[in-house]
Length: 484
Ligand code: ADP
Ligand code: MG
Ligand code: ZN
Image 1 (spheres, protein in one colour):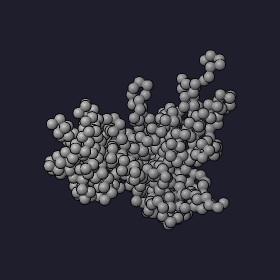
Image 2 (image 1 turned 180 degrees about the horizontal axis):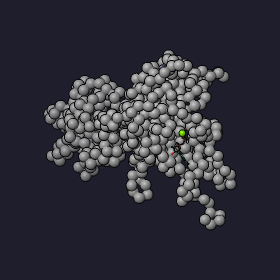
Image 3 (image 1 turned 90 degrees about the horizontal axis):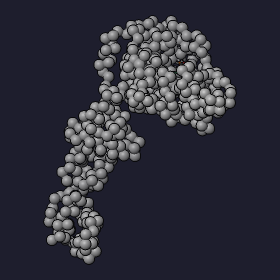
Image 4 (image 1 turned 60 degrees about the horizontal axis):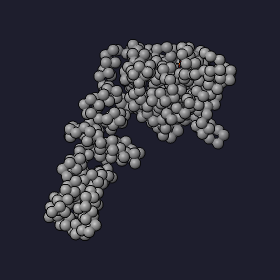
């Protein structure tokens, strides 16, 4: 490289994502998994870490783990083995966390991202491993003292470790959204960052472009949203560049993201695995994972988003944007496909779901399951519109009322008195009235060849008919009347 040329760096990013599994009970005891219960009410000798208490493995948690692994195209281990990861923390009463060290339940998987690499192939991020572990409790810092709530202690988690394959903060952001979308298809977690059921640690290093060897990495914790992950990575990449450009050296460390100051600060130098003194959990025997079990779980997997997206594009001829949007929310895509069974017009139905239905969801900050609207009711409405019983404007008004009250389309349209009754006499009377009223203005303009005067006359008729007419039908009628 010529002297004086600034080195160009390439970021290398790998993410660790913790996902709380929504089993009824905890990983190793019968206590309920529940958010927001009174502090320490969901505890027992096992999850309190009392001496002599014996853990038992929650079969459902292992099954959810297999489900996640299969959805991420992982290999599934032939046996389940747990290890102790020793460290001291006030919210970890046993002094160790039960996790999986050398035999993760799932390994060698991959996640396909909706972006392309330089050769035009879909970008793939390897999933190095996904292992089961128990969550710790929560420390609550209050007025200078710290309280501990152990309700969360022992909640099953799966930690999904992504390969160092991401090359920009934006790719990391896309990886997280794609991972979350795929997991949402499995129904194994709430996936709420707010409630802590989805957590992410980000690892990042930089290297001169073209160099194969990775640089020294930082691990960033305390990232409470995907947006924060992206911002923290951008900050950290710049910091690494500045250190290297000024001739300094980087040390491997764990950092916390301060979202207010928009900067990272050091938490500790990074521990090595040896610091945890992992060893096999003596209180839990290993047990086999029969291949029949794995195949049973595989058979219950839903169609995953990558496949569904292709089907939406091929079969329904949706725009890429609409297809991506629908597939991004399994419940909404299910709603859409149920509606399609009642009306085989994929683009028309999609326009409603992506348009008005989504507007209502956004206004209410709700999910489709919370909305008082069934696919049947939506199709009933679209059919009224198609039959000319509603126009584009009144259909939206009726739709809004349906969502508000839970009424069907016909009921709401009748209650609001929006149905267009095909009364030609009434319509002709109104047309005559309007033509008389604007004879020397709009009507004269229209006769003189001004097309937009017709729009004005349609509007006047619509007003007198209280919106209960189809403007597309009114236009030709008015024109015919004027032209004699
Ligand atoms: P540990 O268990 O110490 O956290 P791992 O080797 O399991 O370390 O890696 C954890 C995460 O860090 C993975 O997501 C991996 O992709 C990522 N990673 C590892 N080395 C680097 C690096 N040099 N730069 C960026 N990310 C890295
Ligand atoms: Mg780690
Ligand atoms: Zn318990």
